[in-house]
Image (cartoon, rainbow, N blue to C red; front, side):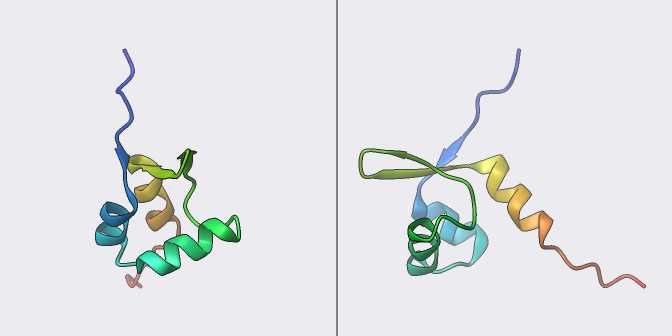
Amino acid sequence: MKDTPIYLNEKQVAEITGFALSTLRNNLFHCRGIPYVKIGKSVRYRRDEVIEYMERYKISTEG
């Protein structure tokens, strides 16, 4: 059985990523950034996709 995805609201994503709410909302408007689900006026992000997005831009400092 697959794990049920956990969805986060904008404030939770802002806390995890350090992005301002205005940045997240601007990314929504321009269809870029972290994938999201929109139901009515509610925007939700899958936790695993938030983490994937952040990991994708990780810079390794090990040489």
